[in-house]
Length: 194
Image (cartoon, rainbow, N blue to C red):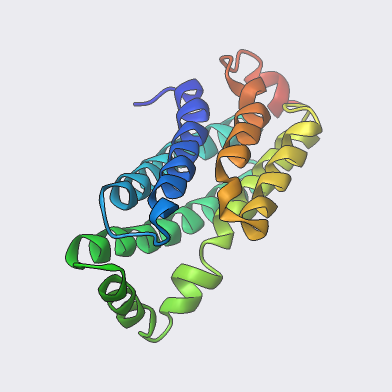
């Protein structure tokens, strides 16, 4: 199993890789299909797996019986699942399509199915960010993180809404936000007894 330290480093690093590959993919004026599109989306999906591992560690540091952390964990996992479906569809349509127009048509076919827009594009993915904010705020409340960590996580949540081109910057901020967690949790019992 991946160590928490590895998860807290590789999750944001792979988000950054997605952001860089997304920028490279757009150099010709269109995004997808192609190698940069597929590689970037694969980086994002793998990053989600590392983030879920990190979320589990955040909950463990709060205490397995901590209800707020448990809600944060499962909310984050639900959001990661929605994002995985969204990016999985992007990967599959990118591999199936001969050009950008065909890829858009295939993606629209999936998106037009009942409930898909809300579950995998509008509402579902937001749960990933909400869960992450809840978990970092809970650890701050338990004195397991400094205040600036959840503040940075919140800031990174807003950045893609301003511009998805800010993904590499957001990833660096996530690395900084999770840096206090890179060390082993020797004081786990101190957190849960607070």
